[in-house]
Image: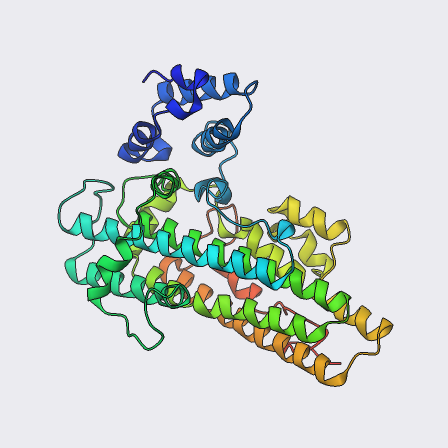
Length: 403
């Protein structure tokens, strides 16, 4: 493959051809010759600036992660390429939060529409992509139905389906027809780089990407809640925390969808994902650390050693919602009704996160049993312990005494 033209014009880079080669064998088995070419191009592009160059360099960093010996959860899911919001850059105003939430809904619909299109194409023999361990017809039908259910809140928020409309198989074409923009097509192509050639890895990647988008928006709402609390607007803060919880509630159907993954497929392709684990999810740790500062033992654990950027934010004095509420109680004449609204919203979010953790653990046990995790972690015992970690200590968490 001749990649020299991309040095003169990054827009000439053959994304489709490179993605096709990666998908044919899986990222773990890409020929050394192609990796060397991609590496050489990346070296040349270091002296070139521009939006298209930055886009290409992000892609090259993702596809060369194993070459660079820095393969992890972030590059496995191609998160630098996904249009995820930066929680630190989101304005805490209601308008900007609504824009970010709408963007997450749109991304979720694109990810699920792409998944459904792949399932239907594979079942109809229209694609030979990831041919290993194709699921039976009944499982494909169930998977598509659950993907539609997971998409339903976003479909309603965007007005594509009415509030009283029940999800039906007839809605499948309406969802898959959402992928019309060329930029969206490229984003979806370049963020699907499985490590092997088993069918169900497509599902696995898209569901995890969907959850990452949810946690990024939850973090944005929590930052806004912290700002509102620090400025004695506790009712606004409560609204933001409630919205954060709603994002998590809306995402619950993703676990049911992931539950259709065939365990034998998961156990096979995970052999080639060593080094990548959900314990490295920065967005999840940002959410956790924005709720309250992690205990010293937690901060020293593998969980935070795996996310050094988040650990640095905590060490640098990142303000948490728990700290902001404590300070507001000390500095302001806080209205008891407003404070109770915020405390109640925090308690509700804590319950929702505990439910999410329990479901995550039970699904991992079903898929993994007692096997260790793939990010050099202990696997399901870690998830079992994580369920006992309170989201808040200041107010409303059943694991702690409420002040």
